[in-house]
Amino acid sequence: MRRYSEAVKAEVRRRMGPPQRQSVAELSKELGIHVITLYKWRKAWRLQGEVVPASQKDPEGWGSADKFTVVLESAGLNSTELAAYCRERGLFPEQVARWRQAAQDANAQPLLTMADQKDLQKRHQEDQREIKRLQQELRRKDKALAEAAALLIASKKIQAYWGEDEGD
Image (cartoon, rainbow, N blue to C red; front, side, top):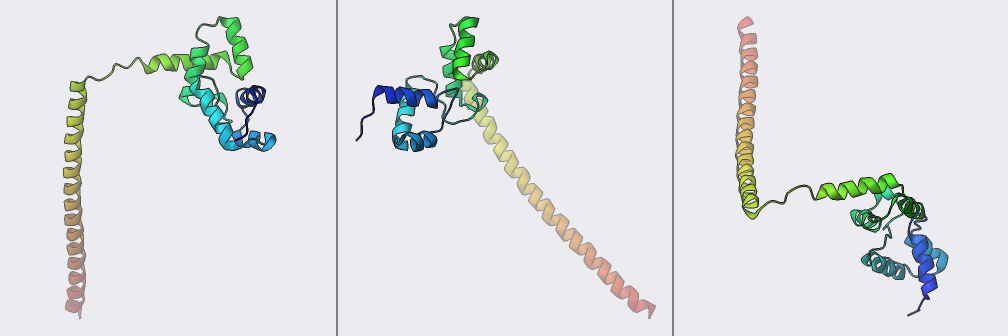
C-alpha cells in the first residue's frame, strides 16, 4: 500500500473542496491516486466535519450535512470574516444565511409524543381500511355499471333486430 505525504493530501483536500470542487475521478486520473483512496480520504475529512462536497454540484446542490457543516463553521464569524470564509469556499453570505435559517426552522416543529404517534398510526390504519373498503365498493360498482351497459347494448341490438323484422 502506497503512503502519501500530508502535503499531497492537503493539495487533494484543497482541490476537492470549494471553490474548485474537482471530482474524485478527475483527481484520480490527474494525480494517479486510486479512486478508493480518494474516497476514503474524503470520507475521513467529512467525518472530521470539513466541508468536502460529495459532488461537483454548485453549493445549492450540496447535501444537508455539508450545508450544516458550513453553518456550524461560520456561526461565530463577524460579517468580514464570513465574507472571507465564503470567498474561500465559493459561497455567498446569503446562502449561508438561508442555510442557517433552514437549520433553525427544521427544529421549530415540535416532536410528536408517543401517544400522538400511536394515535397517528391508529388513524393511518383506519384510513387504510377505509381506502380498501372504498376500492372494493368502486370495483363492485364498476362491474355493475359494465353489466348494465352490456344489457343496454344487448337490449338495443334486440330492438334493432326485431324492429327490422316487423317492418318487412
